Amino acid sequence: MSAVRLAGVDGCPRLPDGSGGWIAVIVEPGGAMSAERIGDLAALLDRPDPPQVVAIDMPIGLPERVGPGGRAPERLVRPKLGGRQSSVFSMPSRATVYAALDDSIPEDQRYRHACTVARATSEPPRAVSKQAFHIFRKIAEIDRLLRGRPELAGRLHECHPEVSFWAMNGETALDLPKKVKNAPHRPGLALRRRLLAAQGFDEALTSTLRARELKVGEDDLIDACAAAWTAARIARGDAIGFPAIPERDGEGLPIHIQA
Image (cartoon, one colour):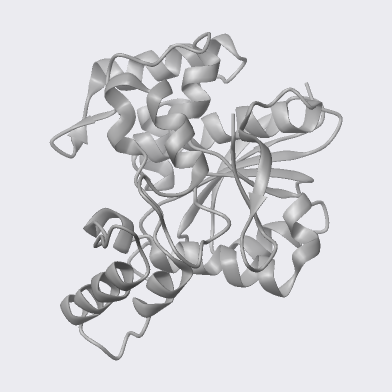
């Protein structure tokens, strides 16, 4: 139990009206937990009773150039994850992320342009995956927020759910995926729910029903809970860092996955 309010945040598809692009699991100082959709991160951090420690499943700290294997955190965590290594993709350069954001350009052209910029800012030259491309807008939201308000970097921390579950599972990689062919994999979801339940996350919070009520994927809700678990470890000073001492990008933002 933490003495401060915590949050775990994961990205999710926006609703048809364009709202709610994030799912947040809030943990109160007394241990009560709730889940909600939020429209933007600044609104969460600027509440009258904001979470003081937020762990988010999204890259923070963007390199100017990328070497083999991506950023140091990505290179360090992949060997821990066994068959789940593919869930950790290499983050491209900051220029690549911003090259993909002009909505006046058709998506296929933006993707090709982002790949061109990625190849020009990586060694060896490497394009970006469609999976990475589709979260660039959320990555840019975090980047703009922290560059404009660097004091928030002490409250907003990067995590990765599969690394959190690795730590939660006795530093052992999970042997079941959350999805197979982009569909929910029930055994993998059940395994993660059991791990979360052992850490005090009520089954009603992580349930299929709650995900449907929030109109989010079950995996997104479960990942936000895993992020909240990591937020508690960060607040207590128990989190494991990859690397142990954060690197910094050209804007001074930390490049660091915690679990």
